[in-house]
Length: 309
Image (cartoon, rainbow, N blue to C red; front, side, top):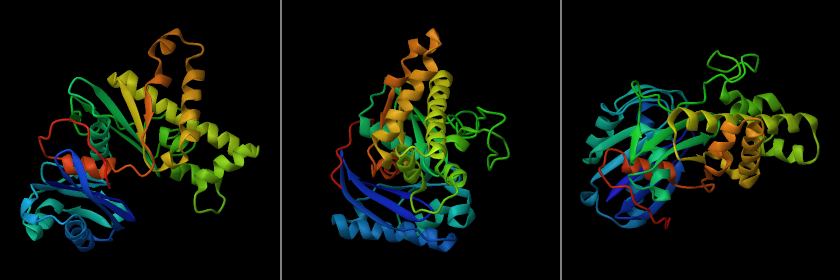
């Protein structure tokens, strides 16, 4: 049995897997600061025990997906600003409290592993996972293994500039992919109050609001650029799209496909790649990130995971 945690800035999603099945799933609030993050790992495992009725002695490992820079070899988290963490030896400290080996991975890279498992991807396939949330990030899985690149940034498309005259990005560049299709950047550009600004943009666009129509087009154009970059640079067979913006459902997917088709209209080369046919949408609320965290550091073969929680 393995346990996986996806720790976000406000919420934590945790799953327990046995064999091919998710046998327990809980969601709880995330803590802020070093001690709260460590306690969250320990308490999440304890809550899963109560939910699924397993013995901690049966847990082979606990995997944690977490935002920020992650030194996976050392189990160390760096610069997870949304959690109030600057440098934290999370694997060693939480593992000591649990008495179980703990592995740590960047949350998007963990989600890429989980998405591959949910798809049932076999060792002969390659895919990229494109996370569209507050920010934009991606991970690449080939033969069931994360491709990290020389310095761990393989597949990170959010801060590739596609419009040097575009909006200023938080990274200091202009016109990054993230400025077009990141939820945070879109909310800032929209500038109107609302709990779900990107949904508000789509709703207003449906009513013909000029600004909303432009921002919705930006989102589709930016996500299409990310798909194109991932396929052209890594030649992945499929780009799986997940993250918070998937709550928009096919309103999001249809817009991205339309943008890909439009981009290819004047290019026989792009048309030959059939990019619009190579994207898949994860359902909103998918446990991909927590599931991938459970697989982190393991040698579990790629296989389809039955989702029961």
